[in-house]
Image 1 (tube, helix red, strand yellow):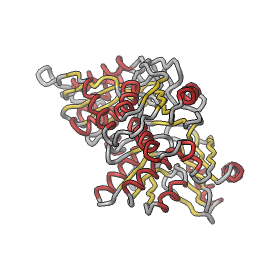
Image 2: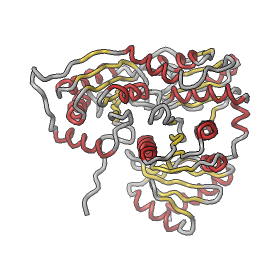
Image 3: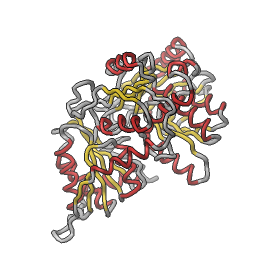
Image 4: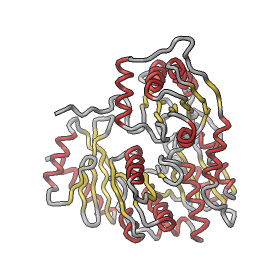
Length: 450
C-alpha cells in the first residue's frame, strides 16, 4: 500500500513561525523559488502589517523573480483582497501573514490560480521542491519583472460594497481592524454601503498596540464600549489578515462565532435557497436546524477553510446550488463573491442583515436555538490510540470519522481531532445547556483516560 503523503511545513492555513527562528528571509525566498516553478506566469504578493513583513516579502519576491516569474506587489491588504485579485488577474500568489498569531510570528499563505488557498496535493508537491532545493533559477536574460499595484485594492472594496444594496437607513457601525490591513478596507466598505463608521485600533501598526491579532472577547472590550457609546447597531473586529470577522451586538456583548455563522446562514438560505451549506464537523449543530427550516442541506468537511472551499467548488461544478459555507470561527465564505473566507464581506453581510431585518442584533441572537459549546485539549503523542478509545467507548452512538472522531447524539455532539502542529487533540462539545455540555465533556475525558 502506497504511503499517504502529508504536509510537513505548511499547516491548514500556510506556514507560520517566530521570525528570526524558523521563519526567516531564506525560507521566504525558497518558498518564492518553489512557487515560481509550480505556477509559472505572473504572481501577486501582499502582506499584513507586521514589522517583519517588508523583509520577508522582499525575500519572497526575490525567489519568485529569480525563478523567472513576473511579480505584482499589491502592498498591505487583507488576504481575501489578494485572493479576489488573484482569481481575476493572476496565475497564483502568496501573502506574507501570520493571521491571528502574536506579533513575533509571521508566515506565508499560498494562493492558487482560482483564488483559494493552495490545496494539500499541490502544497505537498511544492514542499518536495522546497526540501530538495530543486529550484529552476534563471539567468539574467530570463528573470522576472516586478511592478507595484497598491491601487488595485480599490477594486476589492468596490466589489464587496456593491454586492448588497445600499442600506435604506444610515446604520452606525463600530469597527476594530486591530491595526491590521482591514484598516484600509472595512471602514471604507461600510461607508460605501451607507453606514456611519467609528473605529478603534484603526491605524495600521505591526506592533498591535491596542490588542493582539486574535479578536478575543477580552481584547474587544474597547470595541464593546465604543459600540454602546456611539449607539452602533453592531461592532465588528478582524484577525491579523482580515479573513475572519467577529461581532459584538448593540449591547456590546460578544457574539459567539457559531451564532454569527447561524445568522449569516439564515440570511443567505432565505435569500437564495434551497441549496447546500458546507461547513466542518466542528461547527454548531444549529446549522442543521436552520437548514431544515429553510429546505437546505448541510455537507460536513474536515476542519480547515481550504477543505470547505474546495468542497464548495466541487459541489458547484457537479450542479449543486451551493449557497454558503465557512467555519464556526468567524471565517465565512460567500460563493457568490468568492470561495474563500472574507472578513470584509462578512462585515458587509451583517450590515445588510441588520438593515433589512428591522431587528437589533441582540434580538436576532435571542431567537436562535439555545446551545452551549465547551472547548478543551487532550494532550497526547498518540492521537490514533485516543481516537480508537473513543470509537470503542461510544460505539453505540452515531460516529463521524471525517476528521478525528465526532460522537453525535440527538441534541448534543462531541468532536475530538488531532492538532496539525502540536502534540494534543482539540475537543469540542456542544449541548443545549452548559450542564449537558459539561457532562458529555467529562464522559469524553474519562474515555480517553481508560
